[in-house]
Length: 101
Image (tube, rainbow, N blue to C red; front, side, top):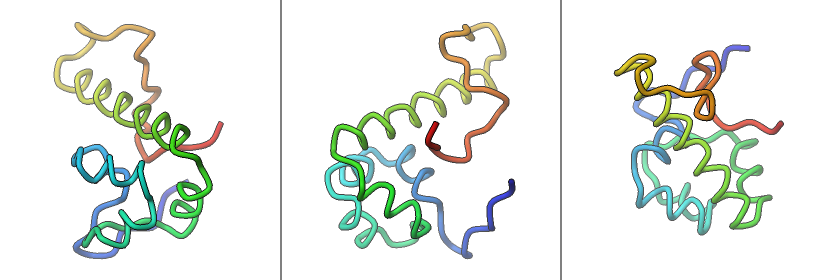
């Protein structure tokens, strides 16, 4: 299922969380405040509710897994299978954001 395009001039909350460690820390600590203070970051209402509904440990685990997956995929894209192993499999290129399940 394709996602709706982002509004012009914005990045997804997940992209910003991976790219900006300070934002990532704020998002884990207080998601609504982090989103309110992040100009140009787009989160759907469902994403905001999901983050707010988690406790700090759950948000930490979710975002750490996202960063791990993106880092593994980027390394695999850049270096090929030379540094890939099944324990860091990211699946078929699906980095559209964290999901339940």
